[in-house]
Length: 203
Image (cartoon, rainbow, N blue to C red; front, side, top):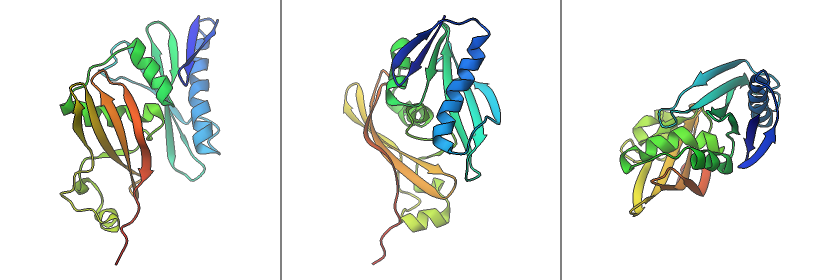
C-alpha cells in the first residue's frame, strides 16, 4: 500500500509494487501539466538525492513547455512508501514532519534555494542569486542593482528563527525575490511570495 500526499493531505491507495512508478509519473505529469500548458508528456525522468533527506528519494521529471522553456517537477518517495507531490507549502511541511532536518544560519540561504521549488515558490531551474555580481550586467543595470548589493541573506529573528530574503534568476532575463521565516527545524513560512523584480524607474 502506497500513501500519496498532495498539498499536505494524505490519500491512501492500495496497489502493488508495479504501480509505484505509475503513481510517481502521474504526480510529475500533473504538476507539469498545470505549469506548462502544452506540456503533455515527460521528456526525461531521473532520480536525485539530497543529503539532508538520507531516507528519501526524489524523482525529477522534465518537459518542454509551450514557450520552448524546460519545466521540471519533483515527487518524493520515502522508506515507508509515502509519495509526496512537492508543489506546495503544505506538502513540504508534511515531509518535514516525517523527516525532520536541522538548519543553521550559515546554511540557511543554501537550504532555502534548494527547497523552495518543493513549495511551488521557485522553479528547479532557477539560479540562486546571492549578490548583484551574480546577475548579468544588462539585467543588473535595468534593475538598478549594484554588484556589491546583497540580494539573499538572513537575519536572526529569535534564537531559533531567521528572517530570510531569497533572490533567484529565471531564464537569464528576470530576477525574483521573496521573504520567508525559517526555523532551525527547516520549517518555512512565506511572508512575501517570490515576486519579479521590476526595472528601476529612471528620473
